[in-house]
Image (cartoon, rainbow, N blue to C red; front, side):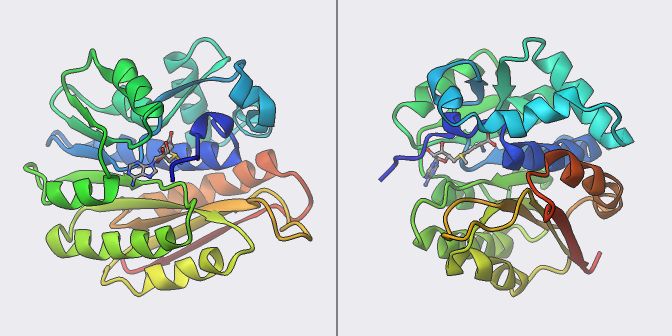
Length: 278
Ligand code: SAM
């Protein structure tokens, strides 16, 4: 079952948070000359048109990227992120997915490996990335494909795992995939995105992730509003990072208060930042 289409949610509060964290990680990786790989297990289409029907139907981007673009003052790294997006996408009706954001940050000798299963989104991803020889995009299962690529030849990689969590078992699958990936490539920088929902699988995921054999992890969450009384909907989202850049915790501590305030939909908006090791 592949009913999830990211075009309905592109540019929402979770995308802004996730893409900001990804921007910080890739910017840090660029500080060293040594090439690296970027692996995106669940790529989506790569580029989204916010004026088209899908994004307009939910209007979620209005409480996400539209707020970031309109913000008065921002802390240093959030301002750099905004400027990067404005240079990449001069037309405000376009918003990038993780593959195009990564493509814009990687250097000529770095490589991108992208996976997307959806029969409608994969052709869009291929079309949006075809001209770039650093990129190989495949219509394949991202979990299995990730394991088959590890360890990557340069022994330096950023891996984004961004599932739709349409089905309950995806929570377990995400944890198991990270466990298998760590056993093949323990030094990779892994970034798993997850939704903060009222359902039990979502609430217990961080505790399961903390049991993984990772010496250094960082957990960051951004909650845009309180959980709804009926238990439906996504009130926030999180990133569980394994082997993050050593500067990331400090950068997030300096920027998440402003981001939580900017993306707040009620007075209970807040962020969470916890780490182990490092
Ligand atoms: N990473 C994208 C971004 O930040 O722009 C958004 C990805 S979206 C949340 C999840 C995507 O995963 C959807 O496009 C869906 O079709 C795709 N998908 C679902 N199951 C998959 C699987 N097993 N392997 C690869 N892609 C999958």
